[in-house]
Image 1 (cartoon, helix red, strand yellow):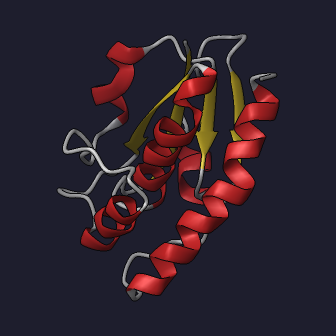
Image 2: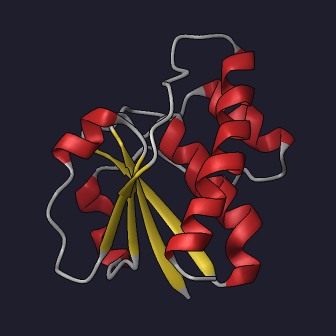
Length: 136
């Protein structure tokens, strides 16, 4: 199983959506995703949860986490940052771990449609990039 760590700032919208979509649509390819934030919020944004429920990708195990909270899942085969702040704050991982940046606009504070758009963009841009980077 290949492990992917997806990082953003709050770990309440983009990275949670990405984690869930990777786990929903790439698990059959042998990919497992985890997500974390450099400054995690207390909870998952309700609109992020709603869009994931509608896509059949929500799990009650998803929660906003710090980078330290997910390090027990290491080693990771790929680290992905999905926001510029996380890219700048991304910790240095041991050599040999690929790190990429695929940025998405933060839907936090916007209406539900912004979350739908973010989920679509993640499926269209990030999932194929992960597949490419992991050579699947």
